Length: 265
Ligand SMILES: C[S@@+](CC[C@H](N)C(=O)[O-])C[C@H]1O[C@@H](n2cnc3c(N)ncnc32)[C@H](O)[C@@H]1O
Image (cartoon, rainbow, N blue to C red; front, side, top):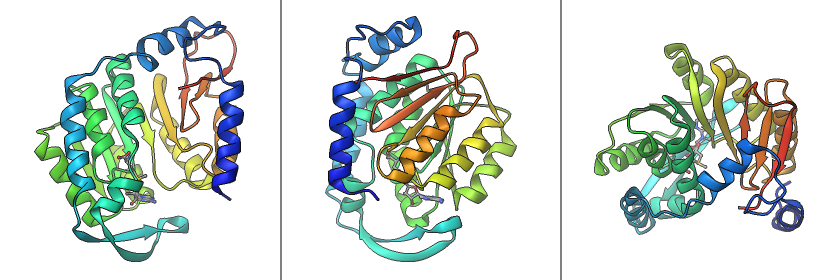
């Protein structure tokens, strides 16, 4: 169930109960610093404009492409014809959250980044630009969407991205077998409980104490809320931050006890 009224009720409750955006009353120095240096950094970094220009072009692109839908078990259920501009308008992370991901990467400086769900490559471009010495692996199921993402990367002259096309169930194990660690992951595709938890389990095999995983749309549906509750209860997770439209988890062992924060963003 992901009705709009349920989402609005959830957002109001989050807004009322979340810690304020200045970090008052947040007694974790790590989280306080994250709020101050990452969440509240209002600098207009130069890459923002160049990536947003490409987003604008995609939002005006009327080309029709064939898009595969991934159903249960990630088998291709059916393909449908969609305008690029409709995908750009509905599937991509907003500017606000894509730029937050850029700042998180610039702050934590991960060497290996994995994104599940490339779509047209806009958020991938932010991730890759946050640390140009990082290697970004991004996974997308749909062939024609992947081709547009490749154009996005070459247009922006971004060279540190490897795009794998195919169902996550195939491409994620392939990528994880090629690399020995994942320092930062953004899980933004197949927003259902069981697959999301399976992606967490797979990522955990290569995560370390300093890895960071961001899950998209944790309140989008009851299923995703259940997944989020299970994610933050996982023994490996020592700190979790709910920003409503995304959830962030950390595995550091230097925190005294497991902590959870909801922060207004
Ligand atoms: C929400 S979009 C990603 C948006 C992108 N991260 C951004 O913010 O710009 C999710 C993408 O994941 C892909 N996807 C969903 N489930 C998948 C699966 N099981 N295997 C492969 N790709 C999948 C879809 O084709 C879609 O393009």
